[in-house]
Figure 1: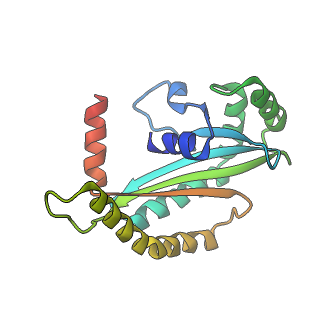
Figure 2: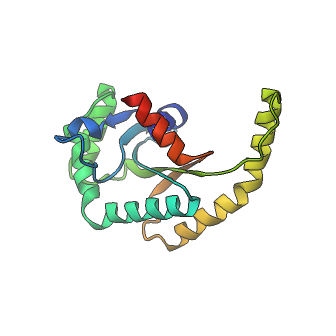
Figure 3: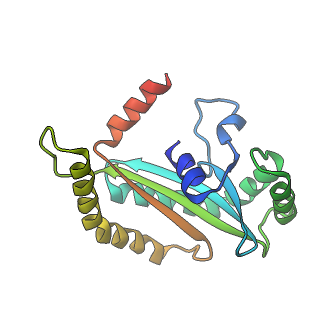
Length: 196
């Protein structure tokens, strides 16, 4: 859900397939990406196809490793071609011109020169910011949180770069989001409770 909002609001790529709607058994995990989004890039004249990958783990290293392993499987087990085919069979939420452009580009099961493949990755992890004293002004809390987060940025970049250097799919583009949680498990529990 978080990645869906980031792709829609930040990247400006509407969802074209909600894979949950395609499941025959809601208890089963969906294989492949966590969602398929697209947008038309007017300046470059191409369709950007985004395959979502969201991993929330206690540790950042585990989230990144699991995400890259999942993307590797996406390319090695034929899931890429399967998901391209899903795009043309189950469009939703896109206008007619984008639909026709995508259908033309993806009708062979692979994007052509007028499309770019992107992976949008969300890595969530436990992170302990320095606690503030009760009664601290919101502006002060936000400023301190931002300072601590930016201080951690070189470490985030270094961990991610290590995975990029060893990946075998350098021809695709990536959008990466890091979201620190006080507790990933507490977030999962609160989300599950809200959805029940």
